[in-house]
Length: 615
Ligand SMILES: Nc1ncnc2c1ncn2[C@@H]1O[C@H](COP(=O)(O)OP(=O)(O)OP(=O)(O)O)[C@@H](O)[C@H]1O
Image: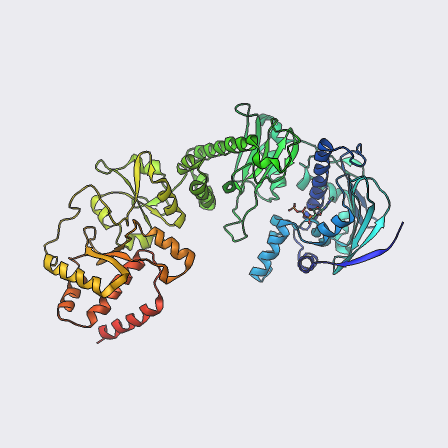
């Protein structure tokens, strides 16, 4: 046997991570054990699966068990599993480079924030194997792959800059990790400490765990048990285990059904939405099982992408155990499972919205974007999801939310459509020109604050047979031929004609049309999109961040507004300032429409206006 020692350097990112792990993390450091035990369990899950699908696995009969041994005098903690083990290449690949999604996110987060005050969040991400260096100043890994050929290897490192790999003895399949504990971490060589930590974080590992030979966990597939046998506490502990969470879930749904498919499902909605905090895209968190055997961990296929915030388990007897991860993509059964569970979950949320409105509101505030993403993209569930959408409106108090059903239920008799208006906030919408005509008619208007709301409404077009119409639609028809009769003190029709023609000339290609408005009461002017609504333009500007991406508008003027009347006088007097005022009125209307204006041109013009105003 060769005893050559190979020394290798850690990847830069790993060095960075290790530096943080070794020097700055002292709270919750006992999570290292959860990470190592879950790695051991993952490795055994892979073996269990392989045993079902392949012959020729090394040490076929080795018991699938995690063994933990403490040595209080040598200050070591040893974790042994009979999982897949690692070949030499795998040791380099898996332990020497950064694969762990949590670690990657964590590093990204730290480097973008530039400070370390969020270190406690490390528990949420988990830094996987490297967390061993929170408590150990040396880690030795003895491992032997489940492949028949090949040898055993020993990996060792002090977690600083490099590690060594040496050929080891031909041991039983699996991995043994020996942690040489730091002086301030000697407590982890004590049996009681380890038992307590295992109970706290790893009770639900689906393999027996022994500490110094005594079994410490009950191996239970909670989701296959009868609801009446499970306490709230059991559920919460299970959630904490599968979601790496420290708190309780916001919602849980446990259901079993026999038809149309045999399913046992346990789903949790977390308390927090980490995407909202800028931690990058949440990875799917629901694992797929068949009769308690893991088929795919955190499956990206078993639920639609917009449900990636869910944590839990879906177990179906009907899945063939040997379904390969590649063919799952095309499996009709998996897509059926997906459909059934998704519909069931939407129905559950719908129920919660009436049985627990306050909790549903909390859920909505944190997770609404996912439901909207579903309503926009998931055509299979769009109809069901539309029912869950909530909005503020011109008839609600700030913060009070209604559904489309609430709106439809209180529509006025002479109202045939559902109206909505988009704007960055309630204040902006209510001070803008678009609501005026609706206020006059007493029609309720839904407020949408996100571009995606507009997109959804544009895509679905109607709800229960009622058209969804944007309040800034150019051809708005509220059922009357004359929506608002001309006021007595308005400009004469001839003046209006001359003024609109003049405005068209001044504004040039920025407008397709200038006309007298029938919708305005208090505002001087409003812009409408010749393509229907302004939302498309707003969205294009969001994407392009480009002032020039605003297309031409239809400009409507309020012929009774004092400012417009004075503009007309200035025009008639051939005052050069009239053009400046016209440009500003137009841009003000664009801003009220939520469009982005080049601020440089505007500032110069405003200075000119101020100079004149100040005399
Ligand atoms: N006990 C073990 N047996 C076999 N392989 C292991 C063991 N522990 C770790 N590994 C290998 O090392 C890799 C890195 O482990 P680490 O804990 O850093 O991240 P991870 O477990 O892959 O992350 P995640 O929890 O996001 O899946 C694992 O993916 C696995 O391939």
